[in-house]
Length: 413
Image 1 (cartoon, helix red, strand yellow):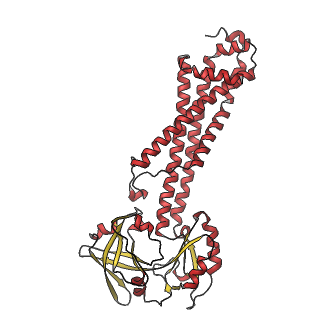
Image 2 (spheres, one colour; image 1 turned 60 degrees about the vertical axis):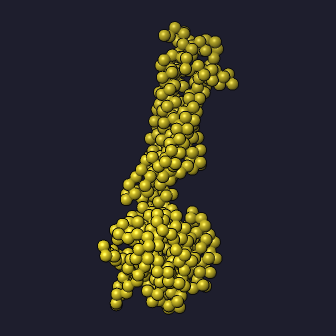
Image 3 (cartoon, rainbow, N blue to C red; image 1 turned 90 degrees about the vertical axis):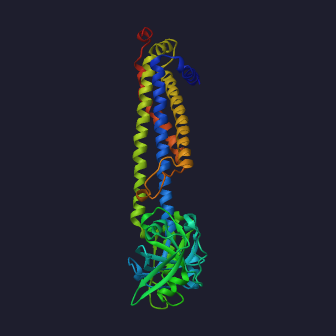
């Protein structure tokens, strides 16, 4: 208690102490604060970026897909029976939130100005349309069904710009098999997600239209999209789906297969995982900066207070007590730096989240502004880690106290 009391008094008087001591205390505090702020902001950016990109990828594709084994890795999909019994069995699997049938048909969009290849996905009323709806920039998301042809199409902003069409205008789609089949659509909505590879290649219409174009039997579809309640249990749920349907045949002798979103887009998820390494590197570098500035500051403070140390020893203080005194002093500096670092980090995160001050090229990074996300477990871990590691590092400079003798230090100038 005595050493803590003296340390608090010295810390409270640090502003009126010697110039070197004030400067050292300030530098140590700022070093810890900046290091901590950089760590918190960096982690929030990486977590925000991972979540933003992952949510967009998951929005375009289901967590798990069940499809024909022949369709794996192919541009043209083969049909598979997805009847009520199949959807019921899939829905009964733990962690499955919804099961939706879908069809995909490659084709070509054409206007008087331009044409381009496209994959049109037919979706029904059981398809989760919330993702596309939330990214609409014009028009609306029609109520697509599997029983009525709406004649409406939802395309991306990149597609609309290239084809020079707007909401309410007509666009033709051509499908090539033995003969050319054409369909006229009205652009009902335009979306933008900034996932370039997806935006330029996917359009949406009702399931009934695409199903008829494919010419399959009533219970045959491209496959079923499964969305989960908890994405963290993806691997476990995939194994349950595999055990339920894989290697089994439908009424036409086709084999069921299943794949997760990570298997469908491995390069994107591998890239997101690499960002975790960036967090580790930044944390190591910044904690080293914090430790270096704190250690340097404490050494300067000890040297400037050599006379005080000599007097303390002359009055009967042991080396251990004096070391504890300066360790407590250093702890107060670190705590103040942590508080200031948190305030600085949260201010920057708030400004970026509210105003999107730092922007990015969406063609490269998939987002228009740097995304941020606060994870309170990460905040707690970084704060405690900084406190513990910097505190342990202070033990080394505090050992200098043992070499200071009262006889010489009292006369020290």
